[in-house]
Image 1 (cartoon, rainbow, N blue to C red):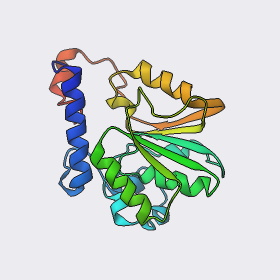
Image 2: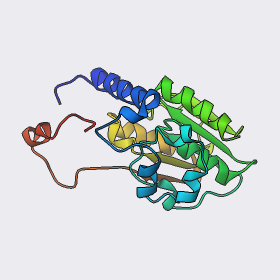
Image 3: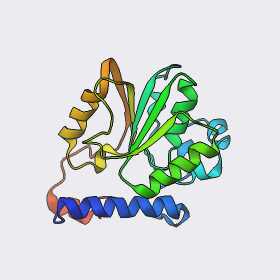
Length: 197
């Protein structure tokens, strides 16, 4: 990678700002409700959401398939984007639960706030922040969810440390992500495209 870390983060923010504002223009990776259904989300659950909630979905898996959320739990969604996973989590934890979505892209946060309102939810709290500096108190969270974000984080040890910091004893991480399964020489990796292709 020849780009500076700041340039990479700026490019990531620009890319996902575009996914928030014009999701139908995304051509390099799947977005939207059809992608969510292919990844194992229940079609009825996705179809019941307002279109604005699902159109900017850019996840790579289904973190809910790992374990059930319980009523009353507090959940943090790292890289919450336009809020689809946060909204689904809020429905699972109910009135006594709480969901905090954290994202570094202001356009996604604004859309997530609008989407939570459109979905009739008041217990979602979207905050500007990064995965390696979560704006969440220590030992205050039952479950951390993340969907397709860890691979984009430059400070992976810092992200893991933050997850452990915010989780209560006995809390858990439910993460869906992508990774390379074999070692790639730098020349071959460079020929595969940019960081987000």
